[in-house]
Image 1 (cartoon, rainbow, N blue to C red):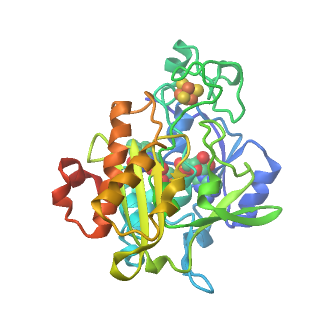
Image 2: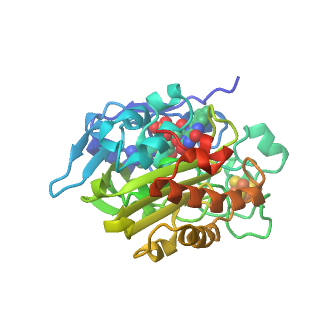
Length: 354
Ligand SMILES: Cc1cc2nc3c(=O)[nH]c(=O)nc-3n(C[C@H](O)[C@H](O)[C@H](O)COP(=O)(O)OP(=O)(O)OC[C@H]3O[C@@H](n4cnc5c(N)ncnc54)[C@H](O)[C@@H]3O)c2cc1C
Ligand code: SF4
């Protein structure tokens, strides 16, 4: 059995206290549900000097209306709670569906939204125990020089997936991020220097090592859905090997605002699991002014799939995952058009929950 090393562990009782602890110790790390941190400690991918638990910070577990419209979701809200919350049943169904498909019921009961958004990137050559990684000579994300601990800055060590690549290609595997990017969410980060708000998509960088743009001393405090989110319609499609539980190897978040006669007045389509960052498909706005005809859907799905660049470092054949991107984007749009999922083939039965 793998065990976590002995560690200092404190419970913060407020965001301010947690921010102070992070500011005074650059090797301190936030512990939320621990469902990613603890396995990574056991595999010696993380070696923090201090774990700052935010489990007792009540303010992080609130969901509240924002003045002027919109909804704020505390970073400490559990995925189980999000997956059944009636406020997300219609317009924000992408969020309900994405959170309902993370891991297992036991994990979702303790896993938090903040932890899901800050989830470490994944790779076959990295998500292994220390001895396994030592045997292959480590890799760029967690090199020998650090004793196999994940770094943010590149050192001279090979990437086994793309040996010529200057960047680590570990995969962003969070389910909630593509759903929330499609919903137009922003995030509020707090540190001892104050707070700042940025669009969720800007929290990420396409780099398997430095995959978050936030500083190490910043806490993700809340996620904010925009004032008009109730006027949208949305969905989330997930590709994974096992239906019972598995990380996404493709996630498609799709949200549309529809006008009279089904004309699209705004659109956001996001992809996860196919790069080191979840992305908003840059051509999303080309859907505006169109109706969801088969031709428009096919043309957009082709554009979107060009941005999927899966590699051979996670589950399922990567050329096939790229091809499925096109199918899933098209199916997500067809679902938002009102098509019956049963008409979309076998994969459709498994890809959507909620
Ligand atoms: C068997 C198994 C299956 C899984 N399947 C999936 C899956 O299908 N889809 C999926 O998306 N994930 C999956 N996960 C990963 C994980 O369970 C989830 O992503 C979960 O939501 C992480 O949340 P947490 O609260 O446990 O985070 P933690 O493990 O506590 O933290 C994760 C990271 O986020 C940071 N962090 C946490 N909260 C904050 C905050 N408020 N501010 C700043 N940083 C913060 C931590 O420092 C850490 O780096 C799986 C995990 C396991 C063990
Ligand atoms: S993509 Fe390359 S550098 Fe990154 S974790 Fe995998 S093998 Fe290591």
